[in-house]
Length: 324
Ligand SMILES: N[C@@H](CCC(=O)N[C@@H](CS)C(=O)NCC(=O)O)C(=O)O
Image (tube, rainbow, N blue to C red; front, side):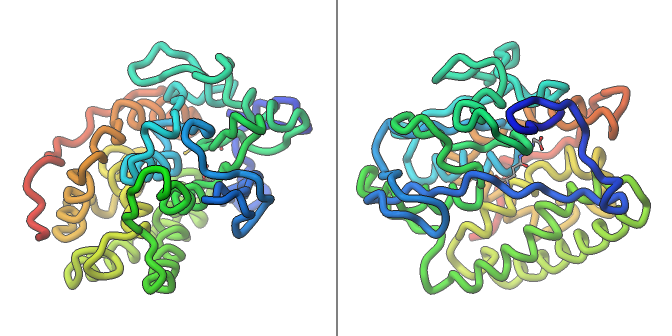
């Protein structure tokens, strides 16, 4: 675990001391957009036109943010158009590595690099900041398009429709305000909330995160009692963004991040919803408990110093979801 400072790797854990024991997530540095015609997106510069084979996605199957991008690649039939490299689940002193000694860890399929940081340094030899996944790489301009998952799923949602013919829309115009409202609360208190609870180094920082996390899960349980999906009767990006945290919850966050007031299986509506999304065509192969269980319990030495991997709950994600 570490980060780049002016192109040099420094091995250091998250600095919570300067924030009163709280974990504060770094902002993403590469914020360009692939668009259908190469015009600029909402941020960054233009020149990234949607083309088959031009872009490559770097992921970890452990990471909930990268998982969003993998799900959208599947939902939008992009597998034949955007290649993938997956890092090894252990994130240790060198950060994410392209070791191949774990099922599903592919190595770097473009450049055969040793470390994920090599990809950042290729884009900018003086890069600074955390070396995170996901990353979308442009083979034509030899640079990173974006390392922000929230943007990547919106690009995948629309930019390649002319190439794939898949026009399924997970962010329809008329639902955007509702989606953004739900996303804001869920990002802060659930997606990032589990990390804020888990990486807290003071009791008060933990308390500040874990209360709102379970308030939000209770609120979501209420929403899903009334509607099939978070914003009504059609599934949207808001559901997929929540799913990648929910699918990891009982086996990882409940124990490792001390989010243990309740499990997902204790919420009947949320648990049914989660099974429906898991069973959605194309999604199950993107869910890799082998990677996420190993990653969290083994990589976070400050949280789990003896690296003992717990036995995990017995849950049947393939049971009928009953949400129809
Ligand atoms: N804002 C980013 C966050 C990505 C992120 O934090 N990824 C984690 C893995 S789950 C990572 O690569 N962390 C490495 C580090 O912080 O050094 C996104 O959503 O794309």
